Image (cartoon, rainbow, N blue to C red):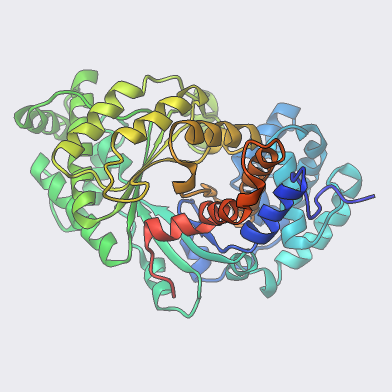
Length: 469
């Protein structure tokens, strides 16, 4: 009997198998958006045990464990690392039909050569075997990246971050390129608690006292220049939706002044300010030739009680149902009208918006760059088989999948890179099935294979143009 994770996992016919094994499997990985800790890479961290690298920080697993009724002590609490792993193992059989079931067994197979199913019976043995491995130099962070053939990983940093670890990595002999993406959301979201305190720190980092809106623009530009000098070529924004309200410069100056004087601002004023600073940032990205990314549609921190206890990014977010099309169109059009629309990737979290995004990108692909405006891969709640297929189908039906820059992990885990393999297998099976049905010509296998190779690696390589060590 073959193992669950085998050579042809998810590949349902000979065409899918040929596409994956001959054109996709061995392509390097360009992971152009994630939340890995660059300090761990710079210091080549060795983890204490499997829980330390696999469960800590993984809110996907945490949500599943809570749903099963696992006490928070064994999720994020003071339970031992071993007990947390045993409780995760107990949860795994209940995750069937959730992507966690596939990811879990792919990760065990690819990193540890373990093809047994993880459950309560196998938990103790797998904990000991994997923990012994990760607590060795062979499984240091850099070796984990080498193991999956990661050519480039791009972490995500706030404008106030120092980039010291990126500087160290740039000078090191580590062959994987480690870059960063500029994430200035805290400078945009003026209504958030702690906004003024954040600007004080931003001003210190930029050596600019931020009293006026012009000061804020100067400070952000200063940090963009600093990031750019340290190899940054991307930005990223995690917003509920694109802001684009009509505003005047004098209005924005007055709104910012009110905020710095600790006066209350209205929701309308916040939207005007957010619109203005977002346009300023995006025009600056264009000047520097960066790629801009917009992750849209998350409804965050829904559980106020648990947010107070555990903080953000601990598993209390969901899909939002914000209107997207009109403001996004107006925003992109405003940049394009000035010829200041840089390469852009738009990700949506609500699958109801797939066709909106797939058609929106065509409005601003002006022939200047191949795939200039991209509909990004399924992310967060949609980076699973069904979500990926729906995104791929919408993109195929309404744009050119052949120009797609492919998958990213968007993860905090150094064991998440088999998600690239998962994505590649799904793409190959989707195309292989259409060849089998006669919807694509089997005689064009070499061309279809090149398309698969490009989606897996080549398109991202060309689009981002990162220097390779």
